[in-house]
Image 1 (cartoon, helix red, strand yellow):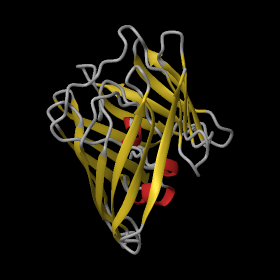
Image 2 (spheres, helix red, strand yellow; image 1 turned 90 degrees about the vertical axis):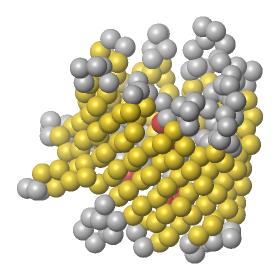
Image 3 (cartoon, helix red, strand yellow; image 1 turned 135 degrees about the vertical axis):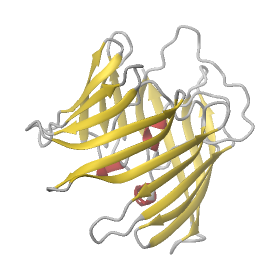
Image 4 (cartoon, one colour; image 1 turned 45 degrees about the horizontal axis):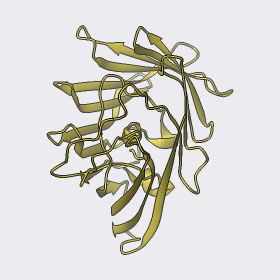
Length: 276
């Protein structure tokens, strides 16, 4: 998780991401086997942190975040996601997926139960790789204002190398910028790269469609930047355990703060994964 990678990740110790230079050849999954991730669990956070359920064809039918803080039903048009609908009592937002003429996801609309679109997520590509994702929100009579921009670079094998995350100034909150560097990828199967773009409890989760940010798993992550007026930074090194099919069963590491008021402090982090 962790995805996503900002000050919020530090605040909630949501740290499960991937990294590498000079990558080896990835280990394929067992031929014909579908990987059906069930739960992602992080100590001291609501459990499970992510939960997945599937249709008969192995497509995701439901996904929950933060032990039911948000709970989405997933709908399809053919093989492509058409909508994710939050179905908790206090929120029935719909995330509607839009595709270009080439079949690539280029836009997700966040729509209230009253049918008002209040947020967009835009995707731009370099070939089949996402190079930028932009979020905006409705702002009174002004229209829509960009409030988050993520830019990605990749290693030749398709694993993300850097994520630059910019949040423009808004009201009394100053602009913040951060960069996350991923290194030392393993050659096994990644199952949690959706967390790299998810802003935790502050925004809706969306499933990727037609692209991946990580194919393999990180052994090292370096974060630097600022969040509001607080400069933060860390490095974390991970060790993974794996199932026989190359999927991770767990990861653990030591996070060391390198900047900010906690510079020099370190603590243990871990994530566990279960499957159907």
